[in-house]
Length: 86
Image (cartoon, rainbow, N blue to C red; front, side, top):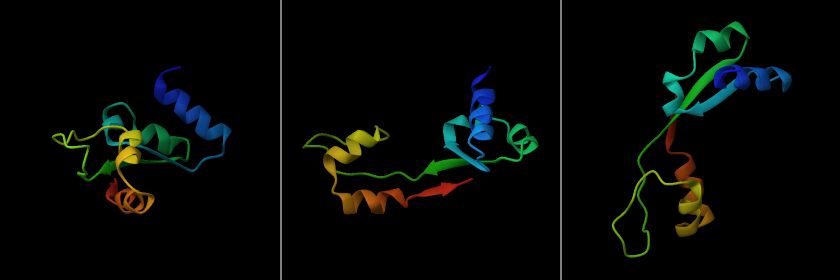
């Protein structure tokens, strides 16, 4: 199975009606293929964030682990709201 077919299969097995993927997957996933299986496909587009990473120049778009290393729970919660669903 292709990656998309695996995701659709998992969604069907779990009776999912929605699937959210990172924006980078737009070129790999077909909204029509998901819709044909009654699954709504969305893409998560994060807004740029910046936080202090030691005393170094900020490196953007690292993993959630990096975010967690340098931010409090409260700050992370605020950051989680900084996105758009497309």
